[in-house]
Length: 349
Ligand SMILES: [Ca+2]
Image 1 (cartoon, rainbow, N blue to C red):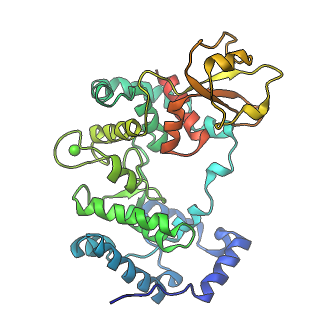
Image 2 (cartoon, protein in one colour):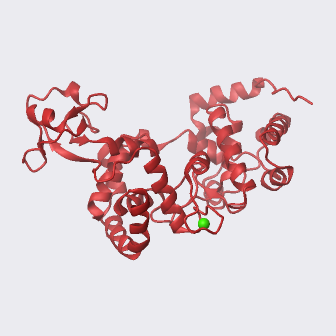
Image 3 (tube, rainbow, N blue to C red):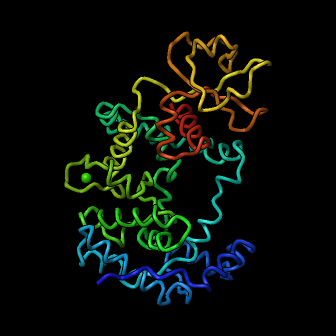
């Protein structure tokens, strides 16, 4: 039987128009205490608007697609039982902080003294493991620690939402339905393959999961079973989590032996239009344009290519970034994030 996806009902269009005017916080009049307890538990929010026939029809149609994709009825029954969209996920989707913080605020919150100190201690603690992974994948130990620190504060905050709940919510929502529907199928595939159960697959409101906050598609593409027990366990096994991150970065083109970038000093007459990731020049060429290292010394006279970026605008700090910076941006397409990874890695070393 073919189930035709129902047209968006009129009430929903009204609600989303209203949401655009008022902001989701006002529309979903959930009390603060209720929201917080829900955020902690990650439990689905009972809501008439979500549990109506429209959602049930959507779910029936999605299940049919998942079955065609080879996911067993048993996995679907276990993962999708009593499932309902989570209002809090939609609220968080509509208020992402990275767009409202300046570069300085962003960096200051992420690369703290405490995090640097703990990163150094953890690098020491896991040195043998990380060194082995470096020899196999070519990604230096300090970067893996930096990603771990930024993604989950070294495993402390791995997310309080059931990934399946979050992804069902976002796949059913209109804003990025297609992207999250694919992520949901990947997540179900991971469960089908026995790497984890739906109950234990916890993560962020956007479906990122495990020590390194992999999206399900990143997992299917790049996760590895470093311990050799048959499970790619990025949730409970640090060896699997670190090696999976290293494998991802290596696949994206990580250049062993090169750094990510450096803070630089620009000459007074520097043409600010050149400060973009689209402009690549060799260190020799940048040097000729008057760019110096932050301490005033000359750049290395190399043919390595880089771009100048100024994340805080033309009055803020300037960075010269290399190929590995672009690899970090394949992990997270945010310039601020990529500088934070590089800066934290440098501080940990
Ligand atoms: Ca394993």
